[in-house]
Image (cartoon, rainbow, N blue to C red; front, top):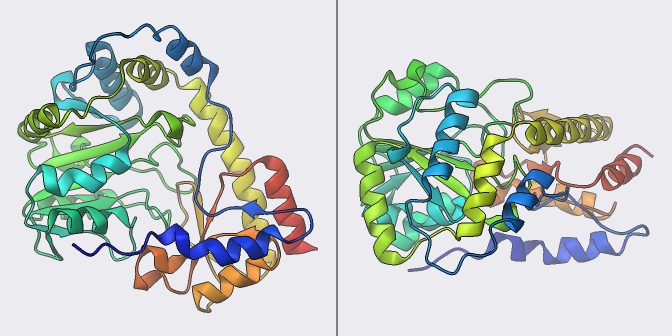
Length: 342
């Protein structure tokens, strides 16, 4: 098995250049949350620290019910708690899903989160369509594009299993995402469908490693059985904290306002500096281009103390774009604005 180089290692030189600029580095590359973990979540975690026994792989009934409440409330999806499975971070799940399902072939978007390909390589799966497992991603990382209902219906009609990465679902700006599990997309039939969601970005819980998958009862049962054997259990204190996070909408709305303000500042700054913003209808990134090779753009921005992700991290079709993350403090975003417009 030959895995690609870890993409972020390739940014070492640009990061050094940006860090040497007076005033320091503005890191808009990885997309790591920087704002505080919500108080409601921290309190729930503190109340659950006495956890001497093993947690269950399926998760507590309270967690699965909280997830189902959220799916109904925010996504318009009715789900039986038996058909929900907590995940130890969604990157883990993306990387291991082809292996867990013994998928002989895997397909994913032309511009896509690199872990879709890595998961296929780990499993020894063939790449490309037609596939036994097809990943779709809306809102997209990195482009921020949102698939409409008709596009989702077309994806669902394809043969094989469809796994929908919906981790940026609650960060909508110019278009409203729709879950692959929504009745408008699939009716009441979730056969062959999986939807993946995460607390990392919506709730500033990337350090907790918490998400879930929901969908086809037969597939969820299959995944649960394999994960039980493999010991893939979310720690019980994290389950309690996650329950609180899925039940609370107030902190999500507050965080959305922070990102909305930062997005407006960065979009104005990039446009003023000659960039065009494509897609970027939702999610945590601006998909920006100066119609030049992405690494030229990366180095141009690094010389101004700003680090971004080159578009070719996400496939050759992204080779003339860069991904600009909104996950920086207000002060850092303002500094990037000043550098780009000064």
